[in-house]
Length: 250
Length: 158
Image (cartoon, rainbow over all chains, first blue to last red; front, side, top):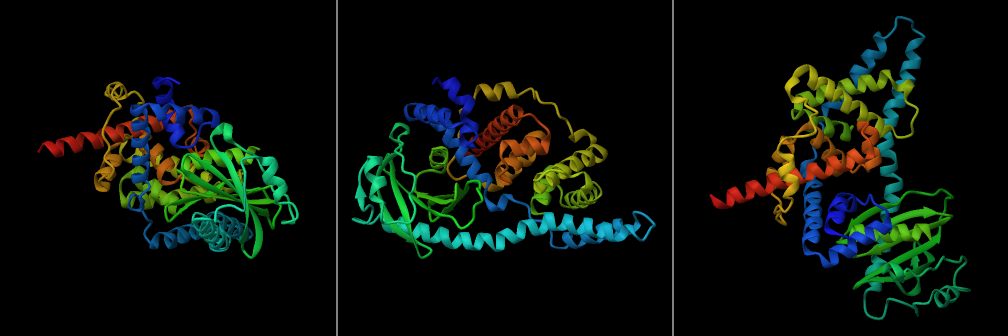
């Protein structure tokens, strides 16, 4: 890839909006090109600063009340017929529900549960980095790692090696999350360890990738094909997302 | 509503205008709720906020709504993207630099970086093709970096 090609893709690359192959091309290029690497780092620094909380304008508290009042007023004066009012009230309720509650409910319930799991995953990841704790079976061969889980779990985790994409499988282990035994696959990218946690999910729903950062580590989470997936690493967010895509598309 | 106000505040650059726009946008959303068929209520509301902002600005401050994409100094900036961005960005300076950007660039940055929307969602909110979303973001960021670097070096020389 030439510098010109790479420069065109820098923004989409930083935003995680290009496909994996091109993303890997960009990565390969910036490993050897200091000036393009600089361009990527500038974008990342700018993005980090823009996402600072102080850049975000908070609505004044009384605005919500004002809006409610003006919506009620609009509902009341819209038409003279009284029968319209209940309908409008329902519509307003739906809108408020869609706009306010939609943001609040998943946040307070699902997120709290997810938060706890995230913390457990992170704790387990940190434990695994201590000497001697990383793996129960050490192998870069998926045909060694996969059978190793047989008889130890009540499900069979998908095991693939992505050495070709520079995410090498280095082993597996059993761990405990939320009180259940889960499969952990261990991958390596340069010096970074990546722990992939897999267990059968409680729901059948497939979800989009949810990403979060805690204590300097990045976590990814999604549910797919009846399995719940968590990925933890100190690898940078954009490379970890690429890895997430590999796992989702295997 | 959080996102609605933040977007309106950045686009209007004024507390009171932002409040008025958000109220107006909610009224419109309320009126047109029947026509909402999509699944993404947030993008839909942001689209209404955005359109309300543009109408508002056109009525109140006509001069500000220039959707002229080819700003004269852009060519120069694009040819010289090696601006310096320090590790610790001065957030106050960043805020004024972002506020000073032309509205179409400001909008792209706010939707992407502050609201965390994907290109596809930005395209839904603004009605722009994906390719345009991407190139606007690229230009907007280059301009921001340029402004930051320019002021930094000026400050350093003084």
